[in-house]
Image (cartoon, rainbow, N blue to C red):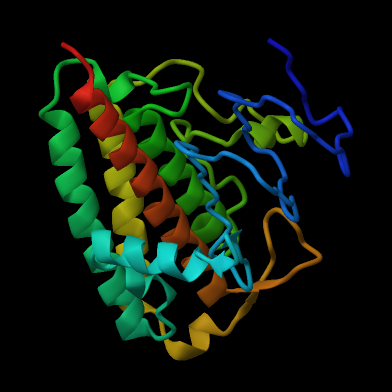
Length: 251
């Protein structure tokens, strides 16, 4: 099967009568792609940045992005609070998120032994997802807001680009931790966000922070917290999707 990577320049390519059935696009940039007269039945699109800013996705002339956003809010009570802009709203948003994740962790723990370490279609396992959320807290709270010199927990799960961008991987453990160890690390970081929000003030939220990935684009404490909330809800969606798949698989 042909494989195209980031080194392949397909910008502006034209596919006419091309058979792309079963093709898989991972971390690709399809912004501005135009499809005409295509059969997309059964297509599965996951675009976490679609709902950022002024993003749009036209299907037969209808912008479905707002419809997707509203449906996700309906499916996941508390998600709509992720853009809260004041301390009380942020505390309520985090409390809702904690309740949601607690129920999902309980569901995962009740599945057959080893299920939390199973990767569905090459995606992160449930345990790896929790480890990545540890990393997200470390990046956006400990590094960006609290300015901790070495903010990373050794069990954190960096994204694929972290090493490729020249970052130091030696701070992370190379051993696969037990699920109990993952839960302990995760609980510590959840409590850290909760404690920070308990004392945060409106003035704190407005403080300018250094963007950990792109210093030329400054953030605020509020925007860093919004990023954490977005990461939490997006990865919860992935986790539930994969738990559903594992639950539906033959024993």
